[in-house]
Length: 113
Image 1 (tube, rainbow, N blue to C red):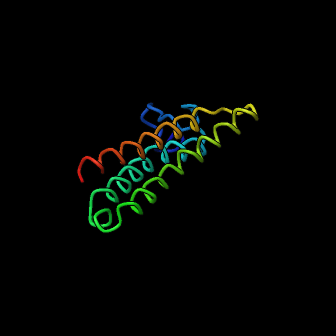
Image 2 (image 1 turned 45 degrees about the horizontal axis):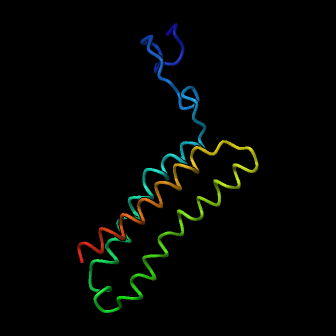
C-alpha cells in the first residue's frame, strides 16, 4: 500500500464538503432549506382542504397564517445577519422559500376546498 489509505489509492480523490466551500453549518442550512419548506407547504394546504376547515373555517385560516412564522423568523434572521455583516445568502433563500411555501400552501388549500 504505497498510496496511503485505500479509499484514495485509485488516483481519484473525492472532493470533501470543505473543498466545495461549504462548512458543516452551511450543509445544515442547505438541508433545512430543502426539507422544511415542503413540510410547511404540505401542512398549510392540508389544514385548509379537509375536515378541520369545514368544521372551523375561521380557526383554519388563523392556524394557516401561523405557517407564515418560519418565513417571518428567517426574515428577522436575515435582517440581523445583514446588520452584523455576516453572509446572508442562506437566510435570504430560507425566507423566500418559507414565505413562498406558506402562501402557495394557502392558495392550493383554498383551491382544493
